[in-house]
Each structure stands twice: as structure tokens, then as C-alpha cells.
Image 1 (tube, rainbow, N blue to C red):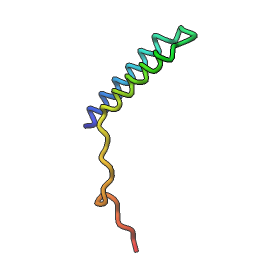
Image 2 (image 1 turned 90 degrees about the horizontal axis):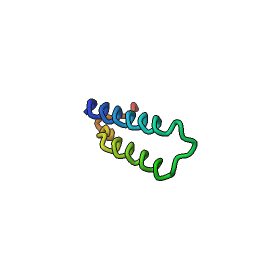
Image 3 (image 1 turned 30 degrees about the vertical axis):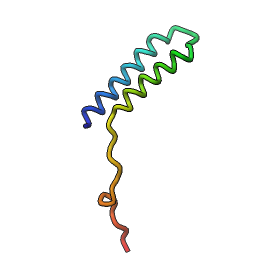
Image 4 (image 1 turned 180 degrees about the horizontal axis):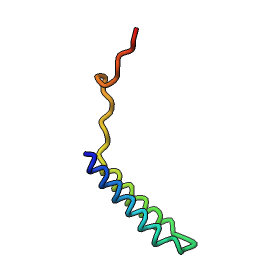
Amino acid sequence: MTETVEVNISEAIALIDEGLGLTMSRKLMSTNEVADLLLDVRTILAATPTEPAATEDAIPAPIA
């Protein structure tokens, strides 16, 4: 699972770098272009599996 997360994060970073490279020389960028880039990054990161929520077994009991 860690490998998948690293691959997805690397892919998202590459997409951001590509988008920045294409827009660095421009003074304006349309909202549609920004939205498309953000949606692409979101799609990649949403595919990243998340860690399971902590269960009661993982939470130590209070000391009385």
C-alpha cells in the first residue's frame, strides 16, 4: 500500500510540475485551466488508499 501511495503522490507532483512549467511564463491563466489542473491532481490523490481509522484495540485504555 505504501508503494501505491508513493506512486500516486509522485504522479500528482509530476502533474503539478508540468502545469507550473506550462504557466510560469504567462501572466494570466483561465479559471478553467486552473480547475482542470486541480481536478486532475484531486483524481490522482483520491485514488490513493488511506490508512484505516484507529480502532478501539489500537487506542490504549486510560490508566485509572
